[in-house]
Length: 300
Image (cartoon, rainbow, N blue to C red; front, side, top):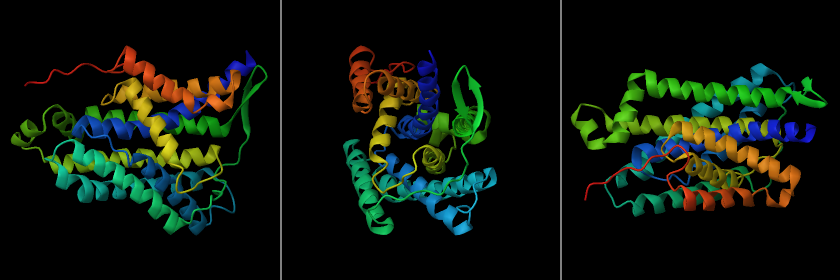
């Protein structure tokens, strides 16, 4: 039972990180019907920005919660700007092109960021500064729960709650929902669709940056290719929950994170990555719309 609880806590922490990345996939798909395969590289840029920001500001000398949130904020702002730039340069000119064109462009942007990252940051892995000293907060039975796990969960939940508030309680959130239903009708109603889509990219990229910083608390290694596998897994999480559905992305991320850690704990860590794609195959066969997705009728 102790092993199960330990794996469950680890799975919830990893799952919340996957959920943050998956939200970017699902938001962009919901508003543009585009799978932004470059989103994993935004996650990488977030981690790299945090690495350099922490060193530049001197937070590598002494871990503190202030340093963590300062670096987190800087990384989210930088990646939000990068996300808006990518949308403006790479995707907006293809807004009315066949859907295959922006999909191929997304793959191209992903490769561009991967190889540019190796040139700019260097191909070698880097050890991010310790932004939060790990310590045990409490124990459940004989299982210790440390502050890093709690911070990852609390920050992820707060960001998800903030996104939900933006989408359902703000003017921009109403514009996002209107554009996702019918972009042309939204434009006719006076909504600035370009501004709304750019904002969506900014929010999704900021959440991916937060995931990059939080994963640095768990995994002390950042590198230019670190976004590939987590990006694919987050895409699986978005499909699992129902791509285009925000609660579904959160649920899919948590399920995927828990499934990974349980497989690692009870079977073998060799199957840790494989389980994500097994889940993808099963969900596509059994329920292609995802757990919380719905079938949309298209007029022909």
